[in-house]
Length: 251
Image 1 (cartoon, rainbow, N blue to C red):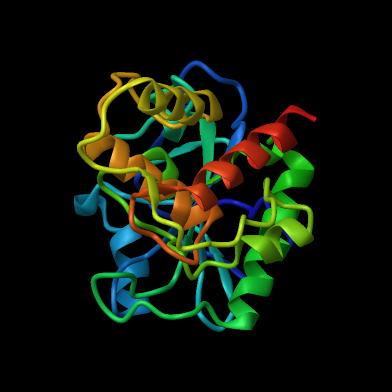
Image 2: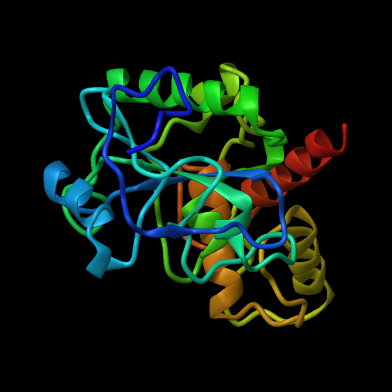
């Protein structure tokens, strides 16, 4: 057992799945997940099962109750194979929050208001202790776009931003004026898109070819920042939203 780091925590349920942070003294990223399992209790049990090899620092149930599984000083095992801004040991650099929701593989649904408010309160509390910049509050899908979709397009990132959590701009409306770039395209415009995504932090190679990895990264970007349509096609709405976010981050 250990003392909880956050005043939001209702109880501590220790997970054995953690270790020392590597190469950093303190986390500088906050990573949000959904559990992706139909049963909340089973999801919590898995995060505390040594055989599973997975964990997170915090777990937020649908009713808004918050459990801490791993101390913030420790390296929880929640990100898996991932990258952001050239960094690949995301577990060492991050605080992980698991949010109970069945996810895309089951009955993906809206996040209840009481749960969202609990996530907001928890994130704000974490940010009082940890040196995490707004553009490093991320989705699991941002750091592992080929593998993960969570917490998904239904997660209310705009509400978190209104509470001072994360980077957000109002997405450019979808005009249905056709794709700008899509699978199979090649050339300088694809180079530019890939470079802009990489500069923002996504693990994108600049190849000039709009291939499956590029599609996956575009879809991950849409899931977080332009959730009205997630199709992996770089339409004008996606490109303009990316440009606005890059400008907002630079300010």
